[in-house]
Length: 107
Image (cartoon, helix red, strand yellow):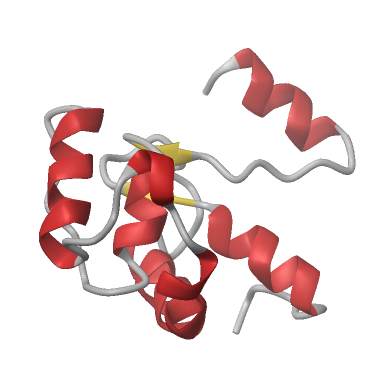
């Protein structure tokens, strides 16, 4: 566990870590993805595979908004206990989404 993670646990802070990168969260809006990535570039290639129109300079909310619920469900399956936030792949962004929606995140 990193120092940042230990500090967050002490206070009223939740982290939305994504391993290996945030693009995993975007992939999960469109597809299941439980295989580890070798690098951030590997994850970006996968994202372009599932959404060919995606580019870093043109990430559009509209391309992902309809898949948010599915992404939350898929992300939960990657780390059901929330005990391995650095597992490859994993993302805790679903907790932020659930929090913003006013849900408990334990559903």
